[in-house]
Image (cartoon, rainbow, N blue to C red; front, top):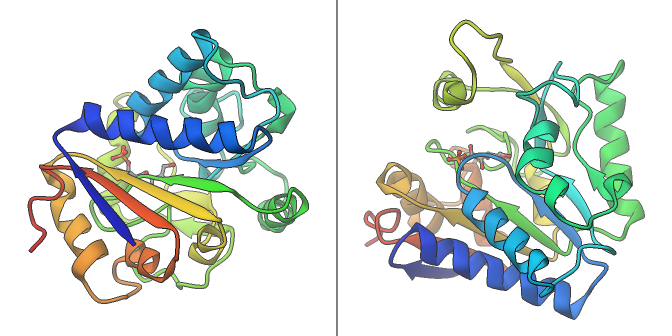
Length: 242
Ligand code: F6R
């Protein structure tokens, strides 16, 4: 596992954008694994700017998002599908049919989980998986104690994650407590993984991920097993490293 420590969030986003640009330059039909949340927003802005400057094209790219709230339809404003439309897909030349997000409102969500795994297999697997990091060490919505071999499935969210994500919901608005998430085993099958983390609130989780024991208590520590994982953090997020 490679750890890159940079000055601030802008430098982390610049670095992440460079890795994505190199990936798409090397393989224009790359399969990209994507994340939602606050951390990737600056990276997505840079990718949109690069597309607008004709520096890269997503015309042949396919994307698979990590997770979705169970019960939220794609058109729901708080769905991760809507998030991706708003912050990336609507602004680039990707074929909408090549953007996959777990189907949170599927009639049979368990079947939708198995179908998602099959879809990833059908395109030859994920070339580059982007991850954020929960304060409790989660990746995707694989909360602490998730099996390190888990596959795409329905997962309960911890009270801490529900609180952390409440900022995306209006006061009184229904906030799901369940999700569909790629499993840790699914994530580890990506050919390359890049995790971004910024800010001092992530420092304990970054420490556990990089220096802690490999343990389901910190799901992100599973990246220690991956031969091509890169952890890109700013100085604040790196502040608890020994
Ligand atoms: C989102 C996801 C989550 C977030 C994590 C960090 O698709 O998979 O694991 O990456 O909760 O969220 P932020 O970036 O908002 O701190």
